Image 1: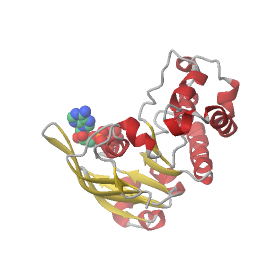
Image 2: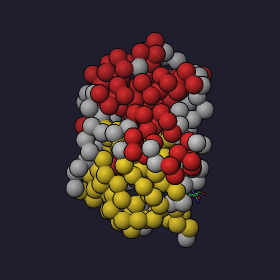
Image 3: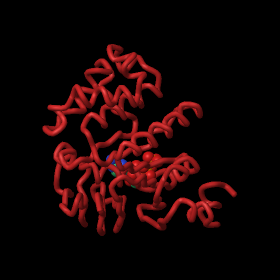
Image 4: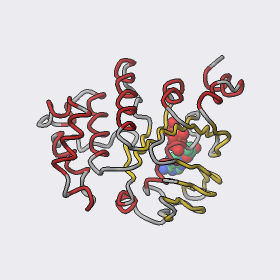
Length: 235
Ligand code: ATP
């Protein structure tokens, strides 16, 4: 198993946000996490990425517990995050944002080669490599955020609502890109409010409500579940 969470709790001060989370992602899989606003999806992604610390439980990458490590050390284990809201260096060029993604030791030596791979996947970034990131459209900035994460040569890409605020056409492009990233052998954990598309692309999915993972399964099974249909798909 590439990633496994066992009994993970996360608190903000005294306020619990995630309880007893258990989750597993195999190499090469796309796993979607769906749930309403405030359910704990970002908390889940951030605790895996080392942005937050678990107050209990284990976060195993290839069987090694990374729960106590800071984000840059988690990255050394092959996990990269595309954070909610992108968090680009908006005053810097596309090229410089990408280069900063290759900071981990194993990736730095391959910066030029990896950037070529990123440009082949996201050609708009090659065209606009000298442009200041903050002057680009929302969709293009999201591509920069994805490209920057890929520069770390991850085995698992964590994506927190990559389609948020984008037009339907750009959202469709985004899901196509996620599929292509996965075809290149990178596992993806996708937190999304675009339920249909998130389930359409996934090998496995989890539903999170009020800080708890309430159900999981194959996307077809979740789409056929009357409670899921009623709660999330309005049917
Ligand atoms: P959204 O889709 O709105 O981003 P989410 O499912 O990602 O929601 P989280 O952002 O993980 O949910 O939030 C889970 C809970 O933790 C919510 O009740 C939220 O108010 C709370 N929370 C999130 N961040 C903090 C913080 N920095 N300090 C205190 N509470 C927080």
